[in-house]
Length: 239
Image 1 (cartoon, helix red, strand yellow):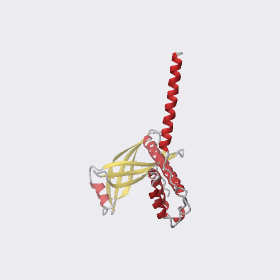
Image 2 (cartoon, rainbow, N blue to C red):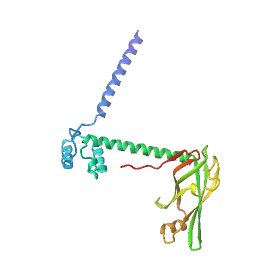
Image 3 (tube, rainbow, N blue to C red):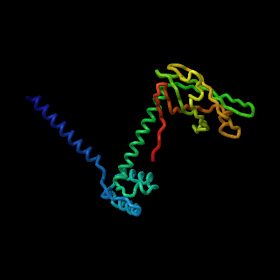
Image 4 (cartoon, one colour):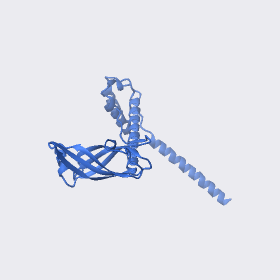
């Protein structure tokens, strides 16, 4: 009997504590509510609305930033904000940021998957001057770490100086130089040579060709398999 009473008291105290914490968290999550959230925007009241909201001093910092962001983003097109309430503009900006975060998440995870499914090794740059034309040949090895054949791999080789500043970025589209077979099979390693025109009057071209010790970073963007599966880390920007 004694034990049962103790258990009952413990459960009662636990439930009371839980209820108290829930109430405190709930109260803490409530944003200060401005009386102007339902106010509609016109072409002539933006400044006065800003003054009223500032004088009232009730709108949360987050909502202020969302409202400011919405007007900065949409304000050049008056029709995008006129007739909308302050609350609508805050909600629109919040949803815009949410969608941008989804895109950023997709990009980061896509890039991670691309990196996990291939290994690339920069071998070197071979200059060639012939018949009045100059070329820089980038030489690199690619290993397909996936279980499928790779049809396309795009990205950039970025040459950086000692401070991490990009000197030059060379765009790579593997399908343009992948001779028969036009696929990189699972677990296969193949060497590729990618030609680029060299402009002797271009300081960046000259630095890449003649400077030793530059850091070379591979920045992949798209991987496509022969089964038409395509993984892209490219983020499409929307206004």
